[in-house]
Length: 282
Ligand code: C2E
Ligand code: MG
Ligand code: MG
Ligand code: MG
Image (cartoon, rainbow, N blue to C red; front, side):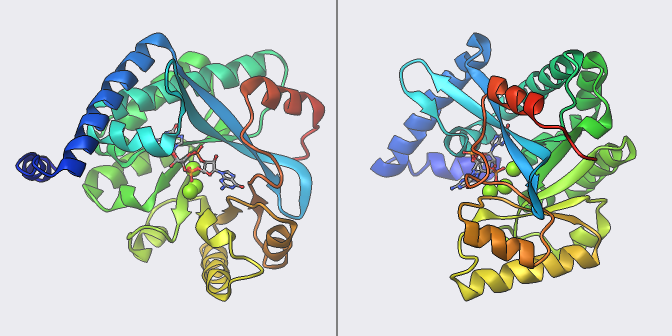
């Protein structure tokens, strides 16, 4: 990484690259201020039982940043910038804190939220302190392992695999469920699926988009579902936008669905209202 950055610095004469580096720098500064000024919040996207899409079974916490001048900045844009600096660690801790506080508050109010997934970056794991910090935060807020779930992408597994695998095992030993996110878009070996104590596989929305219309997407989704079933992993499809996609997923045995068709990511108050309105079947 350091070497790669060093190489980039020697290529500053490239105007486009220069511009991007400058943008990243100012975004990084802005993100640093955002952490201090509390400009970050989580929204919650409900997940439903594919066979019974009225039934709320989980949610994914997604980070949102409201920049005072730029307005909303998408995590797809600022997470990669944070990942290039030390900021990602702090960002990850902030996400845990907001989430544990929020789940604690809902429970204190007598609500019974389903397990809520949150996203972690590869860098979070590589530091080797992730599990310890998370357990501290959970203990502090009285959150049990069954109330959270963790999502990571295949990219997490390609570097420093010794540390990453150890962190994953520690999380598993404490009873935290783990999901592999954006499945099929990374480069990890299938061996990891067998070796790691995973609970859930999330089919990436880039494949979900073509269900019912694109044979290749359907082939990939079918193979992913079959493999997950063979390994006893629960399956979630993300980015479900049409009734046709939902019908396809249901017909092919996908367990859970998440997407704009069912619900957009909701502000905490709106998700709370949903919790108050639905009785959760277990
Ligand atoms: P992801 O974890 O794969 O999250 C799913 C993304 O799909 C979210 O984008 C969500 O808003 C979007 N989405 C959900 N349903 C639909 C749909 O029906 N159609 C379409 N087109 N999109 C849908 P978002 O919130 O912009 O997040 C983008 C990515 O940023 C996430 O992808 C995740 O990798 C990352 N991210 C978000 N929050 C965090 C966080 O707290 N920590 C870390 N490390 N990464 C995060
Ligand atoms: Mg995710
Ligand atoms: Mg995903
Ligand atoms: Mg995705």
